[in-house]
Image (cartoon, rainbow, N blue to C red; front, side, top):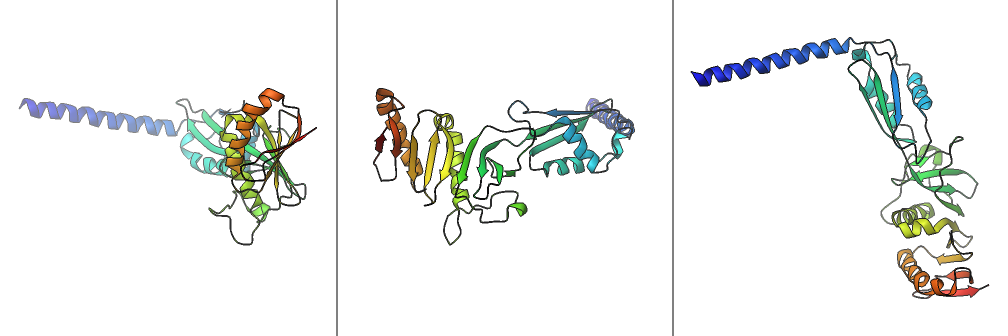
Length: 263
């Protein structure tokens, strides 16, 4: 009998919670949205979008927000629309108890700026997403320039269509540069040391460092990681002793060799 009363008591409590939450939910759906708050979560690193940009994007959707019951506002549609913008990685929206619409935005953070052979420029983030230049903000990232020709129509692509293997007749220079850029970005030493990748007329790769007035001739794309490991060892054991401005050029083109040209 006690067990039955215990079960009945808990059953009544659960039913009360369900009814109470249902009532609160229905009441909340009729709450009027009176304010929109936008927070750009990573605005200290990059500033490709502003609160005003986000609000303008929402107005472009022609969805009424202010003065409307929160239950009638399709925030999932707005999130999906915002995440379709090249500069936005993630958008999250939710209503507060008093009806305020909170919007939290994660921007895409580029790791590479490309200036192709025709002079057209754009950013690429770590996931290979292409980000248009902004008239309001310039991101100080690794730059790639020179003989770079896309193997796809830039206007029709949002993400680099790079294969797992670089074979066939297509020019995968941009994909190779992107792979090198990820490697450089993920290694604090190289991220602080290399500021530009240049592709010369022979299709060979050259690196321009931030420290030291020398040019690094990497040569072909193959074994670039091994070449950079050898170069770092040379920096630590060689340049630290003789000085960083002794050489005009450091050539890594040949296997297991570092050929230096003095000034």
